[in-house]
Length: 160
Image 1 (cartoon, rainbow, N blue to C red):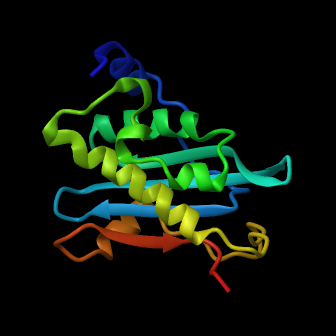
Image 2: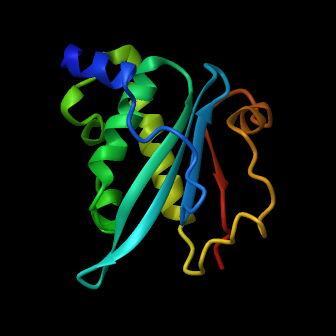
């Protein structure tokens, strides 16, 4: 693990915060440990393919989850949906490198949030913020979770 990059990603997370014009949103968490990650994706068309233009995140949890989510949002820019789906938790850690065994779940949560967002991508345009119901906070989503296994909570525009 590259500790210097990890420290920088923790101290200066990139792309942190809600994206009001997102095309897809995914949330994943573990009620037992209290960690959660929500990821927003904005798409664009490039050479006839749908690609990720921007990604952002919010995280409840440890600093490692924040660092991995920060690295992942940078890595995702310009990736096609197919390329993004092929990324593993280990790939999403980017230049940070392999995580210690007790922190592997942080990468898995970021991967889960990405997959939830990609699965939640709708063919229809996302509703405008004024027309959509208020989005629940990470805290609201977490309190609605049951104890036990990791549970994916999809948010955003429904699939048709």
